[in-house]
Image (cartoon, rainbow, N blue to C red; front, side, top):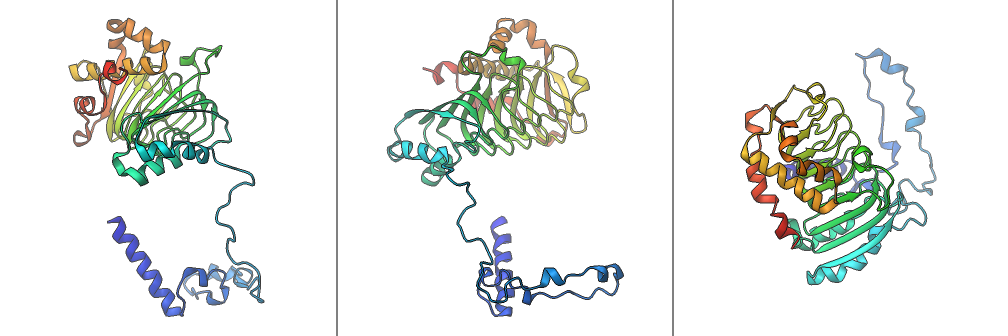
Length: 354
């Protein structure tokens, strides 16, 4: 349907161009002589607008550029980190053999791994690469959109912190984010990733040994995530996937959430006053499939991040399990069966880390 829609848009644009005697949009850019003000007698205020300056020809000689004259608007000297990574993983993608890489990262390095994921998709389609084929470790502070559009077969580990939009649009793979090795703060009490994480994600997994900002998992439709606290508007407009929150949330949790599942640890008893009940409902975690799912995700989170928070919860499992809330859509057709996700996406930890 989308393809047909844009095809019709393109056809109509070509018809209009042909009626004017032109073959492409490039030929009419800047041609203000082809525009005129439409009379609007029924709207007298419209005549108060003077459009002469907008419709004036800025260059009657037709010698100055009327459109962009460079292919991209990149900053001078800005060489994306992905260019270096792409060169390093080329042989790996060609042969399909596992590779491990490591790089320092700074906040000026934005959308890191997106081009690599694009290359994976271009060469291997939606299926991507075998699990953990491309393993990349970063140390430092990642700029916006770290791990965006991540694909199957990629695992990226960041030791440090990340800005907004981590995992935006990711379709597969794993993102693991932990504090710096010698951090003097408690990870579960501090924000180490920014806002709008997993925006529009359709798959993949994210494990964060620390807190996130606002709008975590907004419009998430398939990713699985474990985080140790977050700000307001968590799981906003979520339609699928699973999110585990091992700490406090901000207000308006689950606003517009029509699918997926969230498990929230509520040790203070404040969560019932912080979630948005318009489309979601809460219940305690009692079903065997829910318990198995939650414990499996916590175990994997601890294995991948070394999270002290996860270790404490698992050590006192019988005491902490009753403090978890399960949040899911109140629309029956949108409910997710945790067992289905468990069998499909969460392999036994022992096998995954053998």
